[in-house]
Amino acid sequence: MPQAAEQEAAQTDVVIIGAGPVGLFAVFQCGMLGLKCHVVDALDMPGGQLSALYPEKPIFDIPGYPKIDAKDLVARLEEQAAPFGPVYHLGSPVTGLTEQGGGWQVTTAAGTEIQAATVIIAAGVGAFGPNRPPLDGIRDFEDKGPGLGVHYMVKRVDDFRGKRVVIAGGGDSAVDWALNLAGVAESVAVVHRRPKFRAQPDNARKLQDLAAAGAVDLVIPYQLGGLEGDGGALAAVIARDLDGNEKRLEADALLPFFGLLQQLGPIAEWGLNLDKNLVQVDPATMSAGRPGLFAVGDIAVYPGKLKLILTGFAEAAAAAHAAHAVARPDEILHFEYSTTKGVPGGETA
Image (tube, rainbow, N blue to C red; front, side):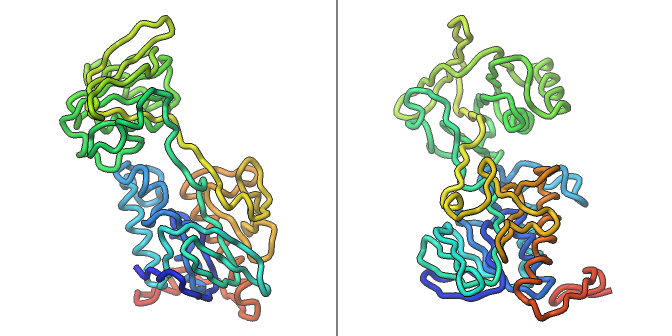
């Protein structure tokens, strides 16, 4: 993967802000139209949330893949983009976006300046971090090694093999990981404040079935009340109901899934047409309302928007075609299917 050196001055057709799945597919779409791309991301690896939060979590709604792990989807997208030679600026967030000379100048935290005819913002939800439950001393139990202490994401299922795991929360993440870890961990307990779960109905039913079979302990209606341990080594999680009754759950690991704290960061200062931290766009072109500036993926909003990866893929294609008209105004674009055109180094029909 071509990685740019710090302090490098560069000029390109498109800067893609965000190296998540939609940003990576935008590289492919731009490449198929002959547009060169630089890709900037605050994370030190491509993939966005798929890589940072749940690389081993299976995804079921990608066309052509009945089931694919998040990390494998990222690898396929990188492979698909590679023939077009994108230049990656990873581990260095964008700090500035300004109109300049009929185009755009993108500045990164590393001091790199990139001149581009167009910019496609594929920044997902922006910067994100864990929503910590309000437990005394919880930070003392964080980052204690694979499968130990408090974790806000699961990067490797096998890290929790043979461990006593307590999961807190009632949404999709809590239920999904309870299902995935039930056959791996020594024990799995799910703490939730009410009997009904806010997860996909079929998965919620599967969780109830596991509980009926004794494979999962549903601790409901309870909430997290405290942590026990010595020297940062977690020993137990205390669950407490509304009447003050407590349960002590022996645990090697606690996985609290209460969502992410999402912040746009510098994006909020770029003068975009924002609606509740989302960029309003024209769904026909994904234009963000300024010449040569587009937004795709979770950060883009328009009437009828569905927040799905496959929706972001279609948006990336629309933005790439609109970007071509800006970056190459004198070049007539003849639409061709990939089966006819092929890709660099590949086969055509």
